[in-house]
Length: 318
Length: 94
Ligand SMILES: [Fe+2]
Ligand SMILES: [Fe+2]
Image (tube, rainbow over all chains, first blue to last red; front, side, top):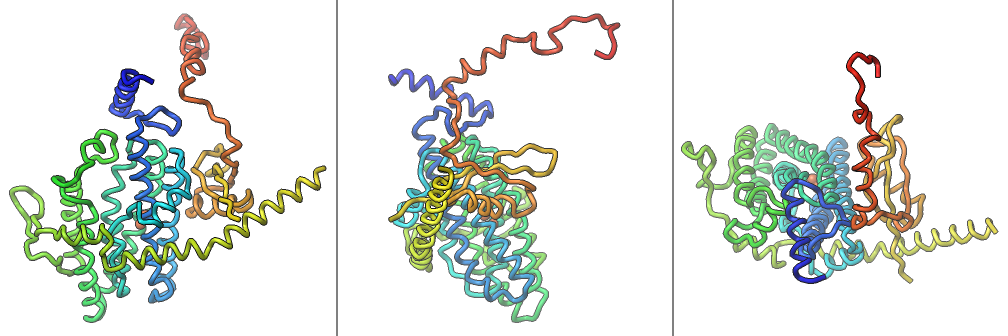
């Protein structure tokens, strides 16, 4: 194809998206669109999968059967989210194996929030409330993104997320209405998860490289800073309801702007964690890779069994 | 020996009276496992009463590049629609 022809196709393509038409896997698309989508969807899938690890840490130690069943169901949902997203990603011609390979070799990233440790039961509350809360803010606009399989996966994901946030908030509520020790535990969890949750919504707009293109392709509908503001504005009253203090001395309602002003985010910490120097980066990768490696014999045995059954069926048919 | 589990397309009937609808795909070693995995991945909240699994490699899809020749001919066959036919208003029940 000549450059002229490609430019023409690109214009038609961009116009389709601008008209709110969906792009489906077999449609012509610019190489950059394909690559960007593989990157974003797989990063998203990896985050769901790695995101199971910090919470998985507490399944066996949940304080009651009710909490255990809920946490187990939540973690299972996250596995499901990862699977919806991997399969959406595979429609663009990349294999599951390649995607895992990218995760396991550190070539692909996942959300930096999952590199923080879960040291008390209250962390299960804080994660559901704050981390899933921030994820919902990120994900809801993606239900209308331009790539059909991604949009459809996000619709399913968003339907399931609301239970995640509610079960987390309920854990916090219970602790906050409990003994002083329990309340302190909840406050401590908020102290540790607040700033990483704000970082989770991405670098400030000034430093965000992909924003303009992503807006055009509807991979993003609001800027990181706008999403962060939205998150803060909706979360502060929830913290008040719990009787907890947000660990930010500069947090203050701005009557003029109608939003909360907030303190400086430690972006050095964010970039350190992204680059692999967070408290749990190494542990997360080690756990993920060993789970995959240790499962190899099971995958191989299942495949061998399937082939044997198939061969037997063929033999019987002759 | 290492062979990847093939990809399966999953179709779910949400309730009797409705058709099976494409829900997504997943990997499994055989059809039986694909059914079991589909139950866990796509019907955790009673989203279905029946599941079909089809190995993805068995699906032949039309190519969007041929959409013109495939689908456009229908556009000028307006006589396939009831509104093409001019009848007087007095004709009732038609
Ligand atoms: Fe999720
Ligand atoms: Fe979630």
